[in-house]
Image (cartoon, rainbow, N blue to C red; front, side):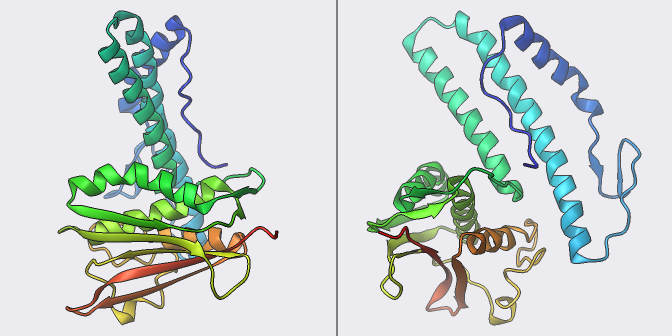
Length: 277
């Protein structure tokens, strides 16, 4: 696994205090990328990148470093919350504290998902895809509401799929994040999970939005590494990683999109083989 995960289990009080203070004291000296100079501030140069394989390797190294730097402050804040806990006596305050700790765990998880190179080494288990989608909706729904986006779901599948839960959750999170980005002015996202009608024992997932859509010239390379249609943000690895994960589970992923003024939007289709009965 490439990423170090920030533990949310509290340290003993003295260790928590030292950990939090130690991180805050040394954060400014952490090595970070100086894009304009093309070097790490610690002085390590980055060699020219020529091939896709080299780009992927460089991105993995950079993602691991960024994840490490993100998880360090998360661990420090978690420890500080642990130190604060004995000073809070009211039920309302303890409830807020519990929510803060829960949100820190979620940020740590989302950091791994967003950086795109999270890999789960647990064995696949039979899981309801409905449950994973419902969990993703719970996380992204507040963001959608704040952006004027309606998140509509139809979860009717009765089958289970043999998957690594964390990896499939990563795929769904990526698809939802892409749809939210495409709906900067608000709109709708439809998530559908149903038993496949064309293939026995399979489950079909679709994530559809009525955003601005993708032009026909950009659709063929949409699953290629480092290809992105975004003007300002985007690494171009989200859909690439999603495809690797789905294919690694014996499934398929495809996309259709239109920029037509009367019928614009994007629809991503995922098929996963079900557990044989």
